[in-house]
Length: 464
Image 1 (cartoon, rainbow, N blue to C red):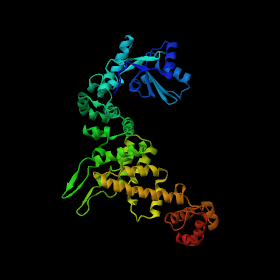
Image 2 (image 1 turned 45 degrees about the vertical axis):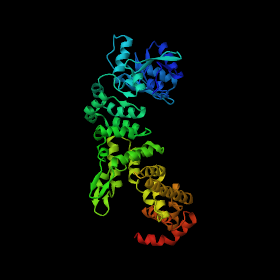
Image 3 (image 1 turned 180 degrees about the vertical axis):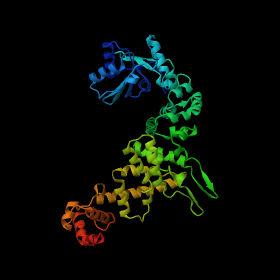
């Protein structure tokens, strides 16, 4: 990490805030991650400001001046934030007792209460082109040397907020840092404290880990240090290779890490990456040994979908996000089961219809799930999968399955069959759709109407 300068470039946004700070006689400091990112040559979009005055009132002034989004205030913490375009701007008063202290001491003590030295830096906002970095805990030096440590005693820092345990692994992976030995020792001692952290805060940190280019760079050390066992015991339980006679099965945890990284490498969105993390979560509970087949995991996708729901709720994810993760988990075996040359177009149509708008996510997850220690096997499996994908594209082009529904609509079914609105109308519509899915008739209006006329008597008789 090259971070030799003691200055960072001022931006138009920061200069504007500096101007308003001077106009209101309010000392304002840019602190934390924005300083770190600027030193590393990265654009800082999350900007935290230390305000040595009424932070909420000053935030309201800035929000009005910048025509920002609705302001969110935290009166208990003397803090507020809002969005101005792509930027999140947060203003807060010092987190320490600061009345009567010199300004420089207030800043030093406030920085000392932050998570890591690389976040314990500040610049006082002026309208100058360059801003001098205040760095009492040698954060720039730690960035340059690739070390992650806390400003003070690591046990105290982690006790103040145990979520810093997870954040340490995320930062180490994101910035390619080595966690200092004394911090790693404290993490091992303190990991149990994560049980008192709100689920939504842990969920947010895990989501950010899933957004990394290589999520395993954080997940594997978290497992090694016993952290994953505390926050995601279901995933930690995937570790280990079992052997029964000549039969054995691979370490599901290491396989899962490969799948997550494959998904990230493919450009999959975060929800698909999280589904990759959970896709085999039920294998330990569904594992059985068959003398002829070896280890089996029948139904692990269905059980896994239910477990994914429980994990999502524990992490306080939205109902919509949980439902999608469950769907991807439940269907993750379906595409690979269609790689056989004998598979019918109707089977492909059924998967496409069931996956619906999430088909691309489903295919990315399935492709990411192709792992093996034998490169030849991986090459063969990928070739088979790509052939299946080509067939799927052909079927999609032919049948336009993305927007599939019966060409004969419900109101016309009622008119042709002399039916009032009733469940029978839905049953007939479903029968038409099934005929198309099975390839009995093409996905065309005239063919569907003819099929309806030919079979409506039989369907209505069967329903009596």
